[in-house]
Image 1 (cartoon, one colour):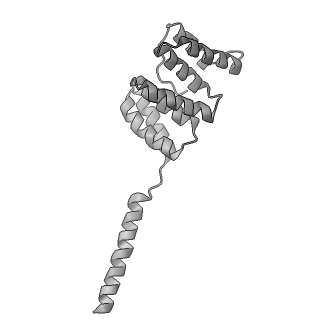
Image 2 (tube, rainbow, N blue to C red; image 1 turned 135 degrees about the vertical axis):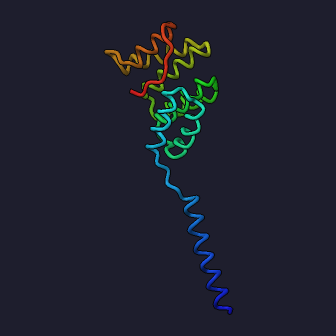
Image 3 (cartoon, rainbow, N blue to C red; image 1 turned 90 degrees about the horizontal axis):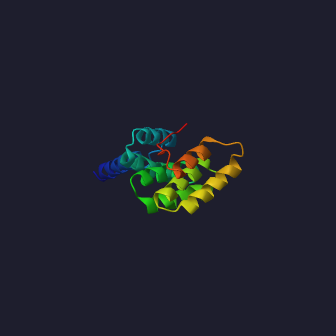
Length: 153
C-alpha cells in the first residue's frame, strides 16, 4: 500500500511537471510575432499591434526595428511619451536606424518640436547623401505635405 502511494505521488509529480513546462516554457516564435505585428500595422489596428509588439520586444529586446514599430503604434494612438521613449530605445540600439529617425522626426512634428524634427532630417541627410525614402518622407512630413502611414518595404 505504501509503495502504491509513493508510486502514485511520483506519477502525479511527473505529470504535473510536464503540464507546467508545457504551459510556461513555450518558445516564442519572434518571426511570427513580427509578421503578425506588421500585418496589424498595415491594417491600422494599432492596439492589436501593441499587444504583439509587447511580446516581440520582450523576446527580442535588442532589435531596434521592433522598438521602432512599437513606438510607431504608440504614436498613432497618441501615446507620445511612450512612443518617444521607445524611439530612443531603438536609436540607442542602432543610431543609424533610418526608419526610427524618420518616425521620431514625425513625432517631433506632431508634438510641435519642429527643431528636433529638423535635427533628425539632418541626420538622415548624412546617412543618405544621395537621398532615401526616409529622408524624403520626413521632408514631406515636416512640410505638412503628407501624412506617413505604415510602410514596411
